[in-house]
Image (cartoon, rainbow, N blue to C red):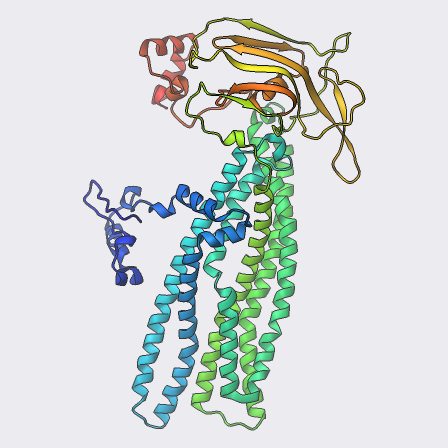
Length: 583
């Protein structure tokens, strides 16, 4: 979908939608070469045209940011895709007009045949063009709105991903990895599902109202019987939608909990295997899945009732209308009967899809609330900085540097009450990639750090590594414990290798997190490079070959590389792999 044509090695040149003629765009003829080629050849990725510029996430994110200042998520998404949405609305309006016109033309055609009038040929031509224009308008509407839904989905995934990268750990309190994955997969998908049905929100009631008017004009007061049956469906659908909304609200936390438990199990698989916890964890996962199954069954039952009503009610409405029409002493003729049946058939489509639209709309509203809650979390601007030079330094102002404590910290103190942390500097003048113009890479002066940003009510002076009582921010003013580092002074120059030694719970990890800016600084100053390489205790690997993981972006030196493999006793292990270090 780009303005440029692409040609593959096999000579196949895919057609581009943006370069297609108007009649090719309306009839999707620009897809014919790809269909013909795919009928006799295996299609691969390079046979498909590249994504157009306005479909790239970077472009969509920039456009969204320009439209989103001071606005809600839904309003910003609408402004981003406003032109396409209005064009899609025009196509839906044309389709609705064609649908309503066909029963009228059918009635005029039957009357012309009964009266043996030549004008009937014009009504046949009118029926043909209504079908033709209606089909093109409907397909163009769906095609356009599907693209709008895909753009919105891409923007939401990009925003959630960017937001997750710009938040400290404590800001993510209450949001597990599974919750964030659900936002990017399930909640963003709701917009993609809603957009093709979006215009039915106004088109379906409009079509129902116009059709009801013509039914009354056609059958008189007898049509009110059928309309009353259809109107009775509205409060029933409303009640079902409310039940569905409540069920969905109860369902989502269970799904988040299951995904969170699965993620934790996979990340701690070594412990799970060592302690033979597979059965226990599987039991918990299946218990949550069973609860999910009950919610899904309830949702599907409600949806089945809605579909059943959409199918049965129009037939009941027709039966009630014609029965009333006959009981009132009216005589039915072909033009009246067939045109009325056609009108009821026109009613069937909006009534059948109203349930799906309501269901999708309710789910999208729930997803929007979840997305707005996550996107409204407080960011740390320093995490979004993209410095040009590694040697650039940042003096961080006191304020919002937040992180979540991993677990309850148990402090080991010496006889004097102070936590033991020793720092030993070894290996000075080591090789460094940072510019030589920098004197102190890391400088901490009289700094105090805490995991929580809440200000504790403390009497007297706080001690190093002390555990203080914090006043909670809930209504009950419950208290929680928070680890504090105070009077921290560190100076690390270029080429230094600093080792931090201390007992379990002494605050070594907290000190590193504080230097990284992952805690809340309550006093003093902190100076560090804008970009820092940090290898945590958790093992990880890049999605690349073994050689690329070992070299890790450095220039490849064959001799040095072989010495490293030999020193790590990896030569024999790599030979057992089919592709050795290229695996």
